[in-house]
Image (cartoon, rainbow, N blue to C red; front, side):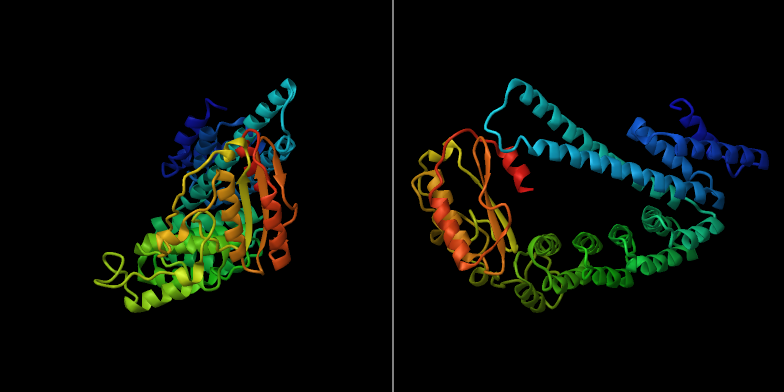
Length: 436
């Protein structure tokens, strides 16, 4: 199979030749399709798999659609398999997280497990990327009948993978068929798929909409900012930012008011990249945007304008990191090195606060961490949830479940962190695994 792939692709590219050559191309396509329907994808190198997928789009005929759909469904099962193996090995590694030491055999098993985690992470990444190659193969079809049939048959296909494939192919048709009616049909198809019940199909729609640089595409992406799945909303933020311009800034500021936590941070970062500004809160952004008359200033802000700050609303966070999420996990080092003395330091943050107001307190690193935590937890909203992971050579979780930040729970947390003593080595990886 390794030897035949280049020849198959070469034959498939001559479909426009006389009928005998077309017949040969059809036979070659059927042979390639049969190969991919029978092959075990895990036995193919990623680059070879991509070459095979590229070959599927070389036979520009509606007869290519059925095998492409079957292969997409079958390949989807392989993607799921790579993800399950990655998660399986992550779960196996968790058992090492809380151990203080390892026997020789356990150490070997731990190292092998870490290698397996890395292997399956890469395998899954390449598997997902190859699905995009398969979508590009579908999007390389130029025959009007084939494209029309793809729109009609794949839009409500029982496999969500095939529907996602169609959504991703739409951006390729749009890019290559700007002067034909297919680009309009592609956009209309994406609009119809916006209400698909599978979030991953809606995610594919969002990714494709980013390539349609028109007002109605932006309006569709703004609608997606209200999607119930956070992954779809996060993708919409990226797609809106990709479009750029004043309209994108207006849309993101409008969406920011309804978001919180991680997605609010994503919108903030997108706005900063678009404008060069940092304002933190939707109302501050809206006020600035009104002042600059909804036009991105050439230098990030108007001439002579006093920089806006959000110090009155934010307060101090944790080591200068502002806390805006409603679910917070503090990961705190309690290894022996935390007993080392530390000179008085000042924490600089971008909130407009005076530096002297943020001086750290504590004679050792641990005391500073304890004081930083207590100062941060005092600012946490009573409707938020939090917990703490302590780590040295082992990992200890303060509460297995996230705790509602009531006054009593926060009081207990302050008392418990004062009882912590620093000792031992530093197992940062175990702490991060436990946190995630």
